[in-house]
Image (tube, rainbow, N blue to C red; front, side):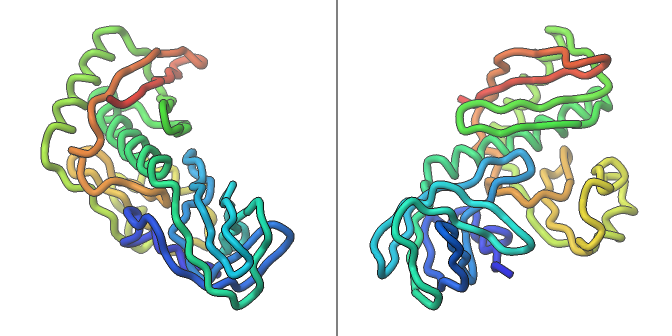
Length: 236
């Protein structure tokens, strides 16, 4: 099983050393990684892998049965090789900003309208979040944007910690966290908390402080069904 460095202290890690434990075609499994595999609405990291066989691009990162597979476009290394990985930081940091912004946006909408997040997709330049049950007016969007920009102008830390699944399920936040969507074999959850706004299980990469998020710009609001609205946004 691949050790996920980004899961704890590694969200800001731009490069790291690791050892090859398995190679299948153009897929390389390392003993540990700071590269985020696609999932949870967040795209994967890309980057460069320096190996004894040469330097190759990491074009995709995926997770499979506890292992993280780094798909490369060059000559694969051999099992046991020491490698050095450099993450595409501009892409990674854009996803971190967007993902933390999504959590804050979800928290604000829940606090103001009691509407839950029922879908999301993150991109480097824009993202979207679906909410139910709600039908936003223009005044609502202005109110949400104002609160978002007020909060991101403050020094508010983003907390990441581990918690027992059963203990989290008993909390008010746990009752609205869609825990039924997580595999039952996951007994310990990685919790991302924005104090006063959002507390939920998340495996993604996040910022340390809301000041890094920037201001939100709502691009459009779409109706995606009865009482289901989608906010598409960018960050300044």
